[in-house]
Image (cartoon, rainbow, N blue to C red; front, side):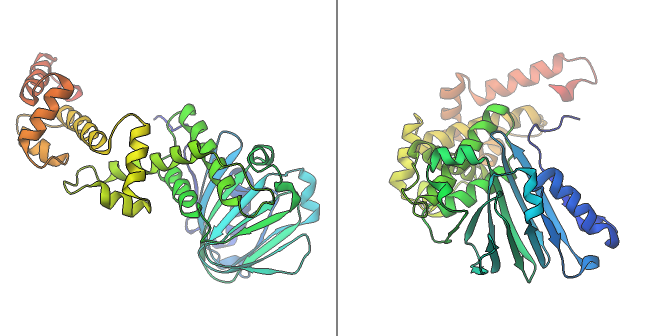
Length: 337
């Protein structure tokens, strides 16, 4: 079996005996998420954690999970591991955090907290909560936000410009892990750029914003949105723009910068999906009309015209060619055609 090069690592304490859960959790955290941190639940025998984590190039790690009440501590004796990466977390409930021995502050649901691992800190939440966690290389983040070292921690409100894009992009990565090193490297750059974007108003002196990289991240999200709704015959650019929280003109500009249009991209992807269906289905019992509708075309005439323009052959000719090639295969190998 082939394993994806950047696959998610997962842990669910429901699969572990109660008395062993905290030990398993510490081991998983140390190997895949965040080493050098003590986790102290108020009830060791009744903790529940569902956790996933994925390591990417540029020393980037993205993680998501749900924890029952928990206190996390990065104590002074743990700092001897020398780690100084920046880590940010976002949770869906309020929590408290204390950094460098200062008085605890309350963090609102959805707010982002960025902390340097080279600083003592602890945080705690009193109810089951979901969280996003990202660890970033200190030097690479400082390249984009040169004065970030002026403070050990930052709190970024949920309403800050760029926050929805950052969260949506990280979620997209978790749901669709990169299939190659090239894609993973590009995705990692986008996360660094988007993190610098949301830090722009908090880091004194401002963070350098890479508009090109931000647009690339947004374009990838829009592409994923289109592909998820490709078979919807009512798919249109106005609804897409509303879902993404941008203007139609902005969406058009993104596609234009990529050398295409929204309509052409949708049509192209539907045709590619049609070709896949021709190769996967039993064509003796599946009609061209059915395939046209299944990939989102509203009528078979427009499908036929678009197909011929794209592949220099009609769907009927394409279908006949596949059937003839399948018929020529040795018996028992038809399913591979």
